[in-house]
Image 1 (cartoon, rainbow, N blue to C red):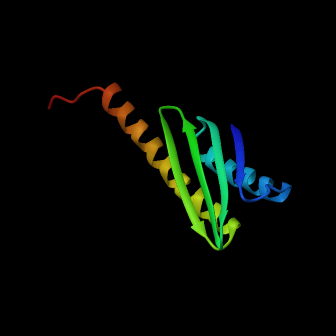
Image 2 (spheres, rainbow, N blue to C red):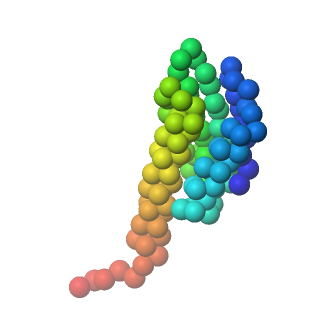
Image 3 (cartoon, rainbow, N blue to C red):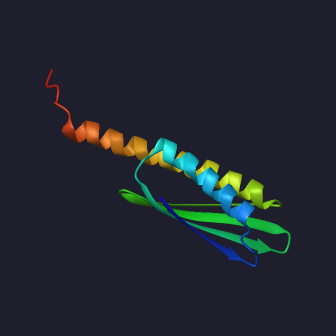
Length: 106
């Protein structure tokens, strides 16, 4: 999984980069086919924003989260992406079961 981190009006420090990388590895537990992640961290006045686009097999997922703390924004972002990935995985598994299964004609 390749992770690109971009900062708007914020310097991406090593601890911040490590925190994002560590949290993104959580997504890999639920779905192995995450290929590329682009994270944008933005500071606007007192608002800290984190947004990400995740490229997975079959879809691109996007989420964003805003709060007063950048680490809280990253946590909220990861939670949203985690839910989207689980939903995407379930959708793929449901589709495989419906199209590949033997039909019961009873």
